[in-house]
Length: 144
Image (cartoon, rainbow, N blue to C red; front, side, top):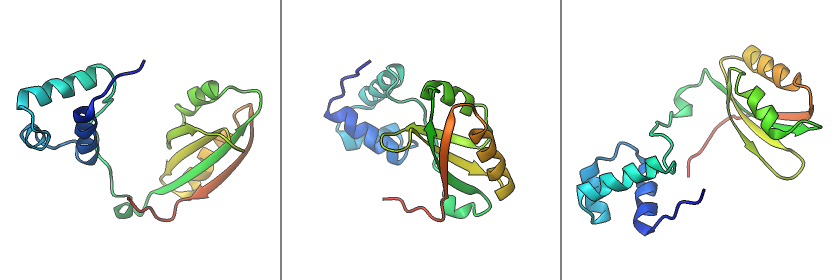
């Protein structure tokens, strides 16, 4: 389903992506709209599914005890949708992306320890239809 967004909607979304806690009064001032209009726009964007959730971003550099990794997966005879259904049940699988090129899927993993990461990798590799995989541990992250 396509949802048409105007320039004010896009600007509102960009502000909320940076800080979902921005007060309605500030949004109204920045967008040159009334508070009521801004609230109605947010409600419409939530109702249409454009805004799925208001969430936080954790500074990964301040959580050195967590291990983050990217796992590239090649599939054979298993649809990506079937695999994603199985991945949802694995603790530590944060999200996944379908890709083009040599890999079919990119899995973002957060593990409590190297042993936990190893366990996650074994579970993913043990799924029937997973042909090949390659994992990279994330050493640092820089926001734009």
